[in-house]
Image 1 (cartoon, rainbow over the protein chains, first blue to last red):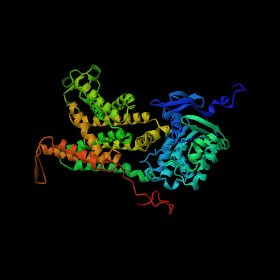
Image 2 (image 1 turned 45 degrees about the horizontal axis):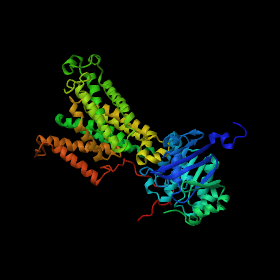
Image 3 (image 1 turned 60 degrees about the vertical axis):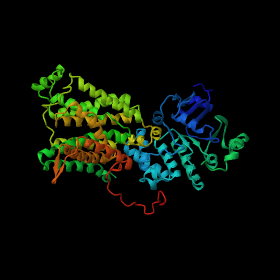
Image 4 (image 1 turned 135 degrees about the horizontal axis):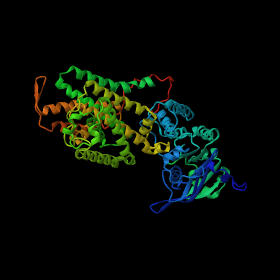
Length: 257
Length: 345
């Protein structure tokens, strides 16, 4: 608690950290000693070309994979060996890049059951579902089966499910893929409200640079399993290395196929 | 919303009531088929509570039925006859007797406790490994009951158990199983397990402990299976082979044919396959129905039920019910210009 300590070590209860994590798959290093720090009340963008290790990092943070080396710290506690469900109950939520809806359940039940998973009472779960489906523009589909949703709507359902757990940290893996460009500002305001109204830390992975630049407080760039750059959106935009690795090729491409 | 859901409970209950009333109307010899069918409904609903909600197969549930049979049987054989039927019985069991209802409650309790204990290690497994491990439970329990005469009659049948299971006791047992299954699947626990069945990764991300939820369902369904076993032994002089492989196969076939995804499916499957199986089994010994004489070779019933199960799996994997529950039609949406979820093609 020394006054000279950096801000983050003074408040260890307020961050989700990956501390120098590495992950190898059959000898190939997907991540090499990457550190990442997500604070509550900020939006951190995680960008980089396909194969840079972004989803691997999200899997390590959320407990769907274990690092070969390094640690994951949730509010200062070492959670590296914790199962995903335990991290979920401890305030860490995520969405998936690929479809992971409860397809046989209705859209509303999808959100309700996520709230139940972290211990909300059934009435509270149903209240949260109404609120979040409204927030994400899915209220009209509440009683439809989740399997009937279009791709982009399904991703927003994933966001609604993640938020239903009232997370302190939420990891959004390409939530805006399939979202029409006209709806990006509305989605950006959802992300901001998660940060401002709920005080959550948001890790945002997306290829949509409009969204990333508009909504992120900080951006971290991954390339080939290593951190290439970190900084504010303005700093990143002006970083030529980044432009070469990423923006040059992908800035005009809205999403991958 | 709640009213719309009532048929989910009342539909299966009405089917059981109809079966019970029909059973009261027919001759005493035919009534046995209805009694047997009602017990099968209880067993299949017990099976459904775990398999239907978790999506994990269990070949071991008949072990919990067998434990229910043993518990209720040992505690209700009249003291004067215990020595004759169970010569090796442990001393404290020799002098412990309870009434009908208490024996059923204890049967359920033993089934639940045992399922909880074996579930602790087993529920960590998924898929095929889980199915095979539960099969091992069936084998272990069967051999314990078969050879350990301190806890029961071994290879002898449970004769002299008071035959208290009439139509109403059998029907009430089925009602209890259906009501518990309904309450469970609508509860927060049942909904979490069903979500985990749909997508384990997304469930874990939402904080759902798949292990914990499966264990709860396993214990609950073990309790219902134990209850069904208790009711069974008060109906017939059961022996160890009556609660072993044949019953395992038959009850799984019932669940598959009816549709493992819904309570309605479990009940419909139990009724339909029971009816078919009863008729074919009778016909193996020669039977006259409406002036027609049927005399089928021994083994026909199992062959037909097995074929039916395979055909259902191929042509209609979600079973007769399609995995759906009964529900009242949805009211017209309040917003008239509700956007279509997917453009009609």
